[in-house]
Length: 383
Image 1 (cartoon, rainbow, N blue to C red):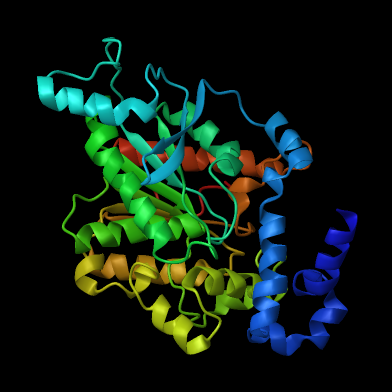
Image 2 (image 1 turned 60 degrees about the vertical axis):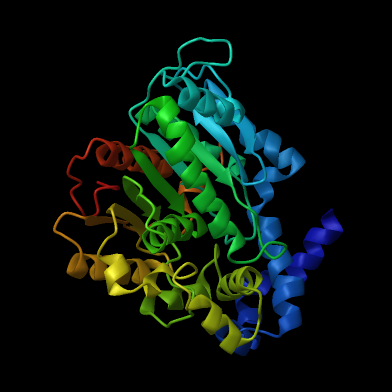
């Protein structure tokens, strides 16, 4: 293990932390590196670093800091998707049985009961969550450090989706599974739990999927989610320059080649022209959706970080919504002096203590979306 870490650090660590080496390889950082470097060095290193919560010893340490919760259940819905149900409310039946329960409801015309005939409690909303990880790594479990807190705070069930990861599963696989998960919540879980309020939330790559699901709903004329909350989302994968993207040249969490490796793995190419063409699909880059699509988006609250390379794209997306959507549809909060991925930084002992407050603030935003309350935009999170 030590040799593996040493080799990975030697081969790719200069992109994130070794200043002398970064200067020698400036052309690679500013451009893309070779196909071999991106896919055989940078990509494995990014996957390894971001998957640390899944490693055996680190996982035990990570689990020590997880909040206690009534339910954290992994389940599958046929071949459509698999997910975790995270809830601190009374869940009397496993979601793996929901398809059968829904069929029983349709046959009898009665309210939902368990397979043993017990009533199933109603809930005011469902939160559907898509985890981050650059489309290449992490899982629903690796984000339970904050989804468990939201489940306690909002007192509604959270369905956190384990979508298929690149490069083994490329675009649009993750979008298809995210849409299937939303359809299942809308057509199966929603009627069983007695709610039509389904709020989508996701961070980074998950924020991309949140917006992509909304785009696909509009494309297919399927009912929209009740509200969206993308957190530091990747909304435009076309490699369009923005001032905030310069942060990747000195960013420790997502240096430029990490972003490039993620895009190449997800979109299935290291060729610039092919990448740009694939990224022009609105389901890959929701920012490229037509004005007609954007104008019909449901209520959205965006959460961004001031030191995030993706900040400018989030602001641009919000600006489009402000121009195209009815007043009050979109709001945004920018966390000052915080980096991309901050929701995952509240680890025990070594975590960032300010992040716990930020997670709570985001939970308040979710609750406000569910209750249709006003969210005051701005830098509330660190005040």
